Amino acid sequence: GNSVTQMEGPVTLSEEAFLTINCTYTATGYPSLFWYVQYPGEGLQLLLKATKADDKGSNKGFEATYRKETTSFHLEKGSVQVSDSAVYFCALKTGGYNKLIFGAGTRLAVHP
Amino acid sequence: EAQVTQNPRYLITVTGKKLTVTCSQNMNHEYMSWYRQDPGLGLRQIYYSMNVEVTDKGDVPEGYKVSRKEKRNFPLILESPSPNQTSLYFCASGTSGGLNYEQYFGPGTRLTVT
Image 1: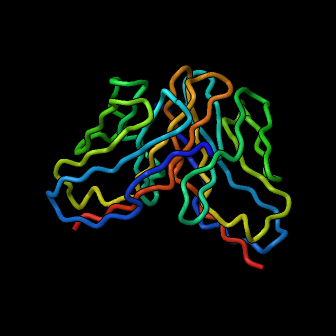
Image 2 (image 1 turned 90 degrees about the horizontal axis):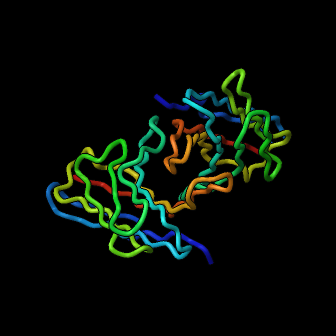
Image 3 (image 1 turned 90 degrees about the vertical axis):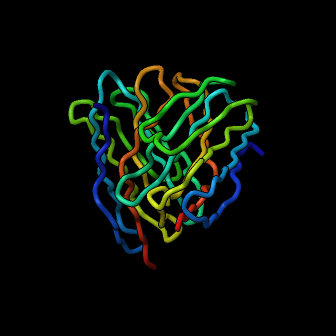
């Protein structure tokens, strides 16, 4: 079946450090891939997405490239800020269905 | 402002006491869904609705009911809550399929069943 695997957290970084959060997926067909972010006490917000192989999604300094050959969609940011502290979820959607399948989430803590 | 609202935000209840969590969206979306979030498990879909009067089970529907009598509202009903339903619940609404697909999430309802 379809599934998403994320690296376990928490990830703890100093401000201005480079961030990578790994995400790999298993899916039939050609899924769309998403990163959602959840700030403390809030719901999930779409951070970025990619709908086909080799697409790069980007937003707020974050990037992720849809790699079909490695079934991956790793999230990166060149210089994190304290305000990036949140839980990040990788997710996929297949075909014409609206259902999102989420990974377990990775908590990021950025210290000054 | 486009948004999904949920009420209540926090609820503590006892085993067996029926409760309803309301969800409303103002974006005229056809698709709505309920998820629960548990540590280490991410979000899992409980029920979803493709349109008014059309609902279907997600991955973890046991112990829950839903209804969709109006397009904007999608309440989640726990007829006889049990402690294993203690969780953080999210309602979402979204556009239908396609490349511009996006789901919008409510702020969450933290439920504790004792």
